[in-house]
Image (cartoon, rainbow, N blue to C red; front, side):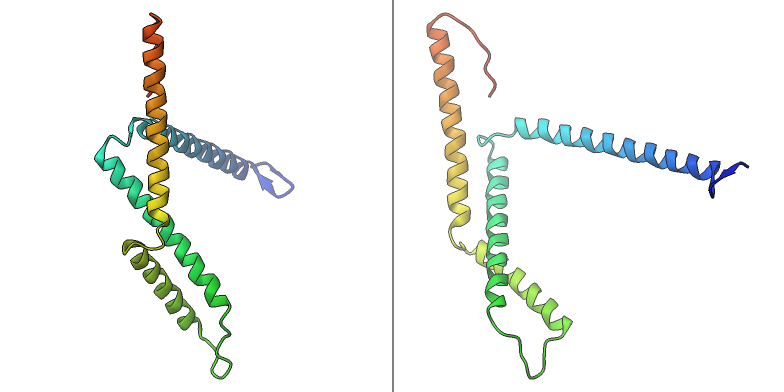
Length: 149
C-alpha cells in the first residue's frame, strides 16, 4: 500500500465514497422536497383537510409565540438567591411553559392564530377571484388561456 503524508490510498477511497454517499443523500432530499412542493400545489383551501392543516399550523405558530413570550417574561424575574436553581428545576419550568403555551393556544390564545388564518384565507380567495376575473376577461375577448390555479 502506498502512503503519502500519513494518508493511505484506502482512506482517500473511503473519503470519496463518503462524499458520493452524501451527494446521493442530497439528491434524495432534493427529490423529496420537489415532491412536497408538487403536493403543496395541489392543496387548496377548498379542501377541508387542508383547511384543518392550516388552522393547526396557525395554532402551532401561536403556541410557539406564547412560549417565547413566557421565556422572555421569566428572564425579568430574579433567580432564587437563597437556594439557587437546579438544572432539574429549569427543565421542569421549560416543560411547564411549553404545556401552558399549548393549552393557551388551544383555548383561543391571544387571537393570533385566528388573525393569521383569516389573512391567509383572504389572500387565497383574492387570488382565486383575480384568476377567475382574468379567465372571464380573456374568454370575453375570444382567447382561451389556461391559467394556473
